[in-house]
Every structure is written in structure tokens, then in C-alpha cells.
Image 1 (cartoon, rainbow, N blue to C red):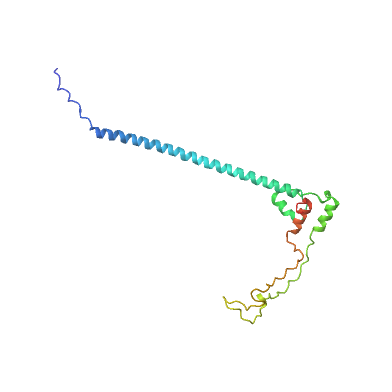
Image 2: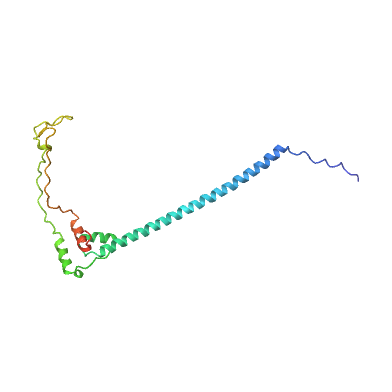
Length: 192
């Protein structure tokens, strides 16, 4: 047997160096983009977990703060006598009934009973009274035009200036909270 034709020579042409460098650079760039995307994904995941953890921590801290406030309110309300206007706040904060009135000294009991407001009897509606006009003007008079001054009365320039009458001291008006504030001031003695 005779030998056949020789094998054809292999393709020996190499790619130009610019194409080889571009292909290697493109492969490295794609690899770096993939690595960067993985790192960014991990950073976003960690940030999300951190935010969720901080939110849970914040919620727990708010719950602890609210619990401390509620306990402080109950401590205060439990030091005051039972009944009266304090029943609603005690129910709101889930507190006890307060100090029994029997445990107070006779002086404190007398002070409590002297400051407890009597329930007002239902009254008839009061008739409406017309309010006086400013400056004592009659309803039939025409008010002065804007920008005009009223006529001058009293001494001229250089004369004594009239002093307004000092208001007379009136009896102190009772606020709607005065029974509670009087009670707290009397028991705790902080208002003197």
C-alpha cells in the first residue's frame, strides 16, 4: 500500500494583535461587570437588612418608651385619691383605682371634700343679650371712614397725659381644670 497524500497544513494565521487585545479586554470587562453587579447586589441586600433591623429596633425602642410613660402615669395616678375625674385617665392607662379615701388623713379628706365640685343643676338657657358696639356707638351712627382720626379730646401737646384707669382686681375665675389642679396642688404641695 502506498501512502496517501500528505495532510494539508494547519491554518497558521494568527489574529492581528489589536483584535486579540480587544477580545481579551472585552472578556475582562464583562467579568468585571459581573463581579460589580454581584457586589452591588450584596450591598443592597445588606442595606435592606440593616434598614429592617433598624426599623425593628426603633419599634422596640418606641414600645419601651411608651411602656415607661404609661408606668409613670400609673405611678402618678395611683398616688392620687380614687374616683372623681381621674377614672377616665386610669382606665386609659390601665392603672389601679388609686389611694382609698379612708387611707388619707382627716385633714386631707376634709381638703378633698371641700374642693370637690358639686354637680351643677341643669339650668334654663340664658336669653341672648346684644353685645355693645365698640366705642359705645349707637346702632344708628355711621362709623368713621378708614384713615380718619377721631376728634381730639383733652389737653393739647405739652399738657398732662391722661392715665388710663387701673383695672380693679376681680375675684379669680375658676378654670374647668381647677378641681384637679387644686387636688394635685393640695396633695403634692408643689404649687405654693
